[in-house]
Amino acid sequence: SEGSRQRPRLFGWPFTIIQNSMTVTALTGTYYRNIIYVHTVCISPNHPTATALSSVFQETNEQKLYKIATELLKTERAYVTRLNLLDQVFCAKLTEEALKGTFPVDVVKNIFSNISSINTFHNQFLLPDLEKRMGEWESTPRLGDILQNLTPFLKMYAEYVKNFDNAMELLKQWTDRSPQFKAIIQDIQSQEACGSLTLQHHMLEPVQRVPRYEMLLKDYLKKLPQDDPDRRDAEKSLDIIAMAATHSNSAIRKSENLKKLLEIYEMLGEEEDIVNASNEFIKEGHILKLAARNTSAMERYLFLFNNMLLYCVPKFSLGGAKYTVRTRIGIEGMKVLETINEDYPHTFQVSGKERTLELQAFQETIEIFHQKNETFKSASKDVEEVSTAELGKRAPRWIRDKEVTMCMKCKEPFNALTRRRHHCRACGYVVCWKCSDNKVALEYDSNKINKVCKDCYSILTGEEKAEGKKKGILEIEAAQFSGSSIICGFLQHCEKNKPWGKVWCVIPEKEALVLYLYGAPQDVKAQSSIPLLGYSVEDSPRPADPPASFRLSQSKSVHSFVAESEELKQRWLKVIRVAVTGEVPESQMPNDATANATDTQETSSDST
Image 1 (cartoon, helix red, strand yellow):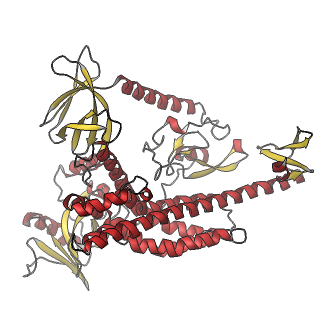
Image 2 (image 1 turned 180 degrees about the horizontal axis):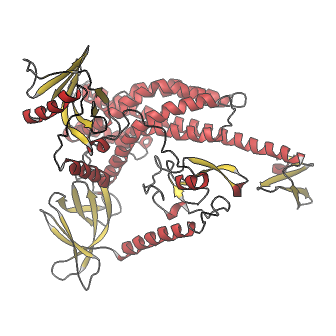
Image 3 (image 1 turned 135 degrees about the vertical axis):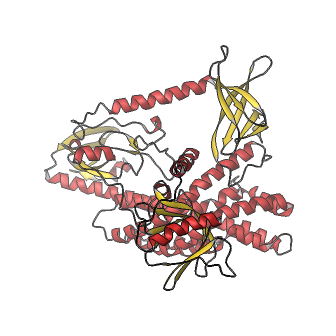
């Protein structure tokens, strides 16, 4: 056939390759008078022809690299289209109206931040470079040098991401406040170019773009040979992009929550005021409500947030709102009690200030829960059949992706963007990238290097795998320090002529001569640290200083602090005055402080 004549040939015949650990098998065929004659040739790996066949696999790998580069170009074109929509349509139309005095121009500037700069860079530089490179891919098959040109411009994304929450809040405020503002946005959203998505959805694109570069570059490096000339540039680009992506990931988690809030907002007919950065979606689902008089069960729907429970009634309509909110119950003071009802099993009572409800879980929901639980248990049981003695010597049964919703090692839930599924090649578990970042030779796969989970790595190598790279001096969680600190708490801080800011300050027991400054009590990395030894402590009031203030100075370095009360100030001074002399101060933490810090950490984990 025409297609067959274009395929590689072995001994004059077209062939397909099947390779395993023992042999290379070629399925060859001839085409004569509408009949295909198939022949099988088994070749030893040591046979000269096997070398020729291996080149086919290299070509396949090159095709994979080309596919990744093509995907990068395709997604970049789509991304630039979205940037143009934000910059040249939404921002331009709103600015045009603002110049008429309908609403402040600064509102539009603060909403769209530096989107114009981001659009210019991608539209005029990165996209043309990618298009040019793909046109000359056969002679210059590389991406690392182009992506390296991207890295100096990542600061633009840091500014956009930092402003994102403020932009969403401003957008909501002025949509409610100004009819003209709202009308312009709705008019653009109704156009085909918007793809039936809201402005908020499109504004998420820049937040999500940097982690997508990271994912594509990781796939590219996996396929790139070790000695490839592009490897050095690609690895250098990945290091910088990955660092920037960590800042975007926290914003992505917020954006995913915001996206869900927008979906619920539309499901409720855009009547309920729920699109707010302080609202965190937790869970939703069908429920049965037991009537107070005749105990009949009626179908209802619940949306649970961090601060409220929405009790809704389904609406039977072809379009528009799906649910109507009957009651909004605040979480504060709410009580949930399991109840016993002979006629209706699995019932419970939700009691809040606004209303008390007696609810029953759907039988289907209960069955699905038990089924998932049993599936997870049976999946784990099946994997355990690969004994420790056989680990790495026999191929495991892979757990299907759909059989689990969370990493089978660290129990963190999977998602499509920041925590994808991977398989351990030794035990078959489905794990996240953090838990599969280990490589070891497996006997059943001809001692080839394979990715395995951390537990299998420890068993197969006899050594513990270090948890990632060594942490930097500031990369210690605030909660970890706060639980065993001499003193910790919020202080206002100012360095030299910089503006005042609220920081979480900790002097840990293990490093009693260092003051760590965090943005919040649950931060995993300190903003800065102050080695107290040799500093001078001043607490005499100055005319411009606020009450309960004190200063730490050394040479040209001056740090000013303000406590919430004079009592707290004196507690901090008692510790710091000892630490600056090189002595270890006594703990100023009350007995229940450690417990409180732990409770704060657990509450944060639960809400996530």
